Length: 128
Image (tube, rainbow, N blue to C red; front, side, top):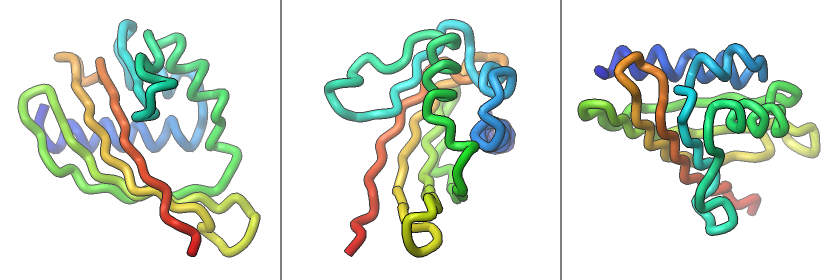
């Protein structure tokens, strides 16, 4: 993987995020991929396999709300990328973009460019 490959994967991730379409999500991950969206103990194992990733992703359904995402690819080493991101949601409960998060993604890729492991650490911006 190089930076251009990682950027293409992130572009596809954004399309899947915007669509919540099962085919778009499936295209991102290997059949045996793991996706760990929470750094906390309750989700220590995360989502196992592409089918569970698709189902759990669609449960969250971010395509139904306003969001925007900015990122910077911090490092690419072999099959591994580290991405810093900033996510903003407009849930219509106050000021536009009333919910913001800082994110770090650790993504390990298979040789075909799909993710085989996705781990995310995020922190919500304080409202005060």
